[in-house]
Image 1 (cartoon, rainbow, N blue to C red):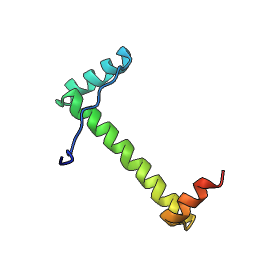
Image 2 (cartoon, one colour; image 1 turned 30 degrees about the vertical axis):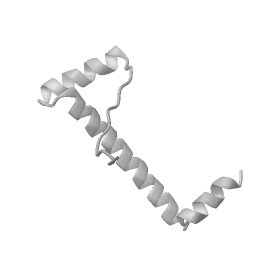
Image 3 (cartoon, rainbow, N blue to C red; image 1 turned 180 degrees about the vertical axis):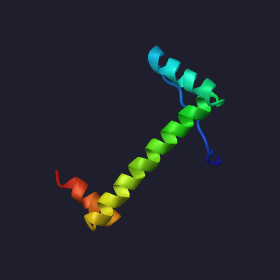
Image 4 (cartoon, one colour; image 1 turned 135 degrees about the vertical axis):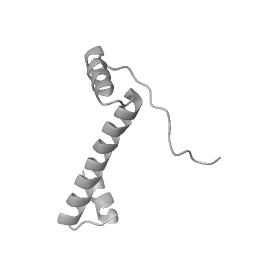
Amino acid sequence: MAERDSVELRTECPRETVDVLDAFSVAHRINRGQLVVRILSEWARERLHEHSVLAKVARLTPEALDEFGKRR
């Protein structure tokens, strides 16, 4: 079976948060789903950037990171 480029994400969310997302969506003429994808994609890019900087500064290879994690 081929892997899909996207998957459905469903969860409960506080009403106040959804109200803000909806207001922003209306003001910027974007639907709520597109806005949530944009927010989550940016968050994921930031985490990947943090990880790559940490690995580079610490001069750790993926193998070294695995070993470091096992030394708890």
